[in-house]
Image 1 (cartoon, rainbow, N blue to C red):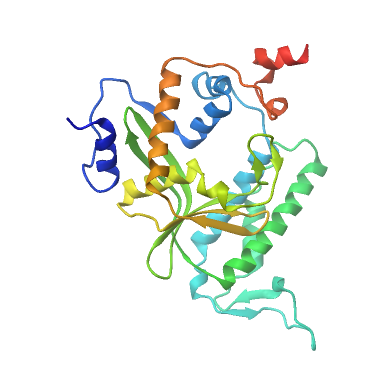
Image 2 (cartoon, rainbow, N blue to C red; image 1 turned 90 degrees about the horizontal axis):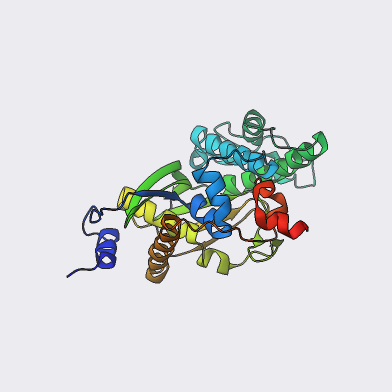
Length: 301
């Protein structure tokens, strides 16, 4: 008799188009929901089951601004058709900085920055000074991004592309920031990161390294979403850290994809068993639900 696991992999790698039906009620999960449960299961309950409103966040506002700006920019402009030229003459005997670069089809840095202003979200900032600090950081990031994109343009096939597929008794859904067609015709999944890279255990900023993307559950999930929706196996998955203007890439291995099924099954099982215990961590002081959390109140005593 075939196991559910073998049916799962037959589905993923070119076999049956649907997984065996189950008598259990389908549980709908996203990467954000799974990661929230892993961070703190009580927070998951407050946010996704009881749907309690969360506090406005400058980091969330900033991330949404950057994502929406880049989506519109790539929707409106095809950088592959552009041959770079300097839109302003460089002073004699000097080399003008990269911010002077425009393109022969009229695309320039100002187009990107205008979209940035248009998409600016300003609900979660605690002060005008904080908002201006984020605004300047965003401008710096986008200028660096533009300089790289104009010199090495790829074709974005899909932007903010949604997907859903089944793993056992769960329906997994999500949205991929960007899927590119590479020069050799293969596909690349790109996930933008607008904030700092942080070590999960202690919440501190750290240098970029390949280990993070190699272990990225999120990108494995997106890989499977792309595979199931388009029947196309991406050649690589990438994290684009806009703060550093650096993209790190890796392929996916079969054991990483098996880990997706294991993690989803584990989280879904605990949710169905109503396991919602608070979990203390370095991010607790910034949690929207700390006033409701018995563990946080206990820590204050």
